[in-house]
Length: 200
Image (cartoon, rainbow, N blue to C red):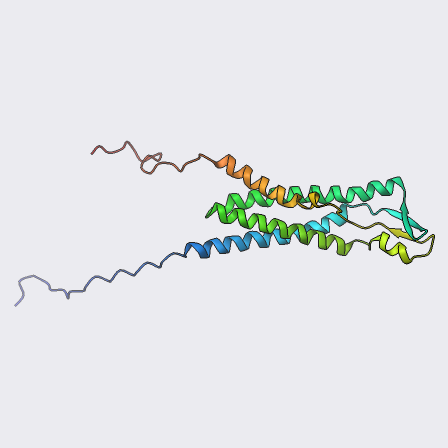
C-alpha cells in the first residue's frame, strides 16, 4: 500500500581517501642541494668557455729555451686572471642569489650546497679554460728551437683568485638573506576583502 511516501535505498557515505603523506624533509633538502650543485657545475663549464672567448691570446718567441713576450703580451697574460675573477664573481653572485631566492626550504642546506657547488664550479671553469687554451709556452720553450713563435696560455697562478667563484656565491646568498630578513608573512584573517574581524 502506498501513502505517497517513497522509499530510497540507504547508501553509506564514501570513505574519505587517506591523504598522501608529504615528502620527508631530508629528501626535499637533498634534492635542492643536488639542483644547486648541478647548476653551479654547468655554470662553471659555461664560464670556462666564456673565459677563453673574452681573453686576448698573448704572442711571444723562444730564445735560449725560454719564452719571451712583449709588454702587450704581458698585459694580455695578466688579463686572463682578471677575466677569470670577473666571470667567477658575477656568476657566483647570480647563482648564489637565485639559490637563496628560490630554494628556501632549508637555509643551512642551501648554504652548504652553494659553497660546495661554487668550489666545483671554480674547478670546472679552470679545467675547461685550460683545455681550450694553448699549452703552457714556458714548458714548450724548453724543447723548442730559438725563434719559435708560441702563444701564451690561460692560467691562474695564485690561490686567492681561484676563490672568486665561492666569494661571489656567498655574497649573493648573503645579499638575498639580508634583504629578506625580518619580513613576515601576512596575518591570516586580516586579508583585504575579508571584512572586519568577528567579535567573540
